Image 1 (cartoon, rainbow, N blue to C red):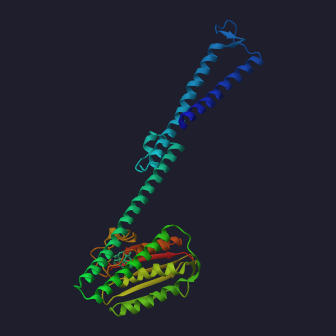
Image 2 (image 1 turned 90 degrees about the vertical axis):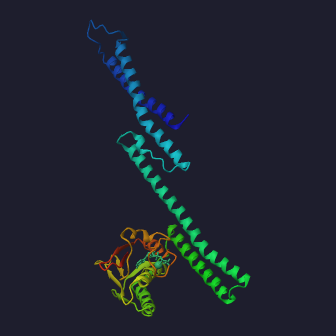
Image 3 (image 1 turned 90 degrees about the horizontal axis):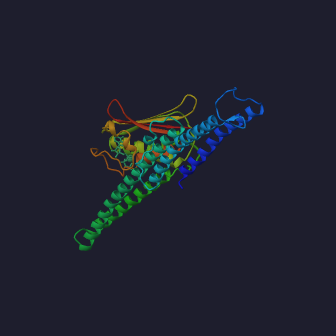
Amino acid sequence: MSRPTRLFRKLLLVLSSCMISSIGFTALYLWLIGVTPPPGDPVFKVGGLPLVPLMIAVLASLVFGAFLAWYLSRPLEHLRWGLQRMAEGELGTRVEPLMNGRRDEITDLAHDIDGMAAQLQAMIAARDRLLHDISHELRSPLSRIQAAIGLLRQGSAPADAMVDRVERETEGLDALIDEMLTLHRLTAAAPVARSAVDVVEILHDIAADADFEARAKNRSVRIATPEHFVAQVDGDLVYRAFENVIRNAVKHTAEGSTVDVCARAGADGAQLEVVVSDCGPGVPPDMLEAIFEPFVRIEQHDAGRGAGLGLAIARSAVLAHGGAIGASLADNGGLRIRIALPP
Ligand SMILES: Nc1ncnc2c1ncn2[C@@H]1O[C@H](COP(=O)(O)OP(=O)(O)OP(=O)(O)O)[C@@H](O)[C@H]1O
Ligand SMILES: [Mg+2]
């Protein structure tokens, strides 16, 4: 017998017994204090108690008890059906529409179950997309390695050049796998290893390196920060997050322009806000969120093509520290990334 049917029987038993016993106790009380119906009353009595009204009351109790039990157990049957389908992988199943417009805690529960199913569905879709993207990203360098080996075998290309190519591709693959592992570690919600780190010092280190490289390409990096901002963070992760954002800005900013890294501490030292802005082409407004997804790259950008994981890692790293990250377009059309980090 299914659970809701058992629940129906239990509810029916409890509700009917409550009502019937209340009638019984009232009748007993009337009998004890000697109250009898007025003389000449045509009601049929047993032991001084009116039998027909009592029978009607018992019958009414049974009918109402059954209705109440059905009313409470039926939506549970729907919830159970929905959960069973979800467990079978049918995550598109929704149970709230089956509640027929009732407004109570059971409908709230159905609403929460639907929300959970929608979230699971989105997570599974994201995972599938990621798997597809990873396979695609790994296949391209592998095909190039195979091609280089083929040419090497035929002897139709200089051996040194082919070995160099294979070396470069394997290094690229190694870096890609390292980034994917970092992203996986961050999204697996494992706690980050925190220690007291001066985030401002990290920013200055990255900006100095980036400026050095940028000057070779007729670009520069300018930085303005408070003296110190010591936070309990994983220094490596925070370094990676800021480094990617600043390097992206240097990569995309126009020739002869300057990337601005501007940090300021909140009034009560509650957080450090870092804004990195450049004078590049920016991204289409509808991609401002999407660029934080793994392997999302803007096709039109001809600046050096990366793996497309940097901003995804930066976002996961910032969120793992309880911070926030977002992108917007600057007035000059360039990209502006804002990162807030708690102490
Ligand atoms: N400052 C920027 N200006 C314009 N477009 C940007 C900027 N930063 C990022 N983007 C766009 O967002 C995409 C995703 O950036 P992300 O840092 O995740 O990847 P990537 O730089 O291509 O590769 P990786 O960082 O993994 O080497 C980039 O490919 C680029 O198209
Ligand atoms: Mg990048």
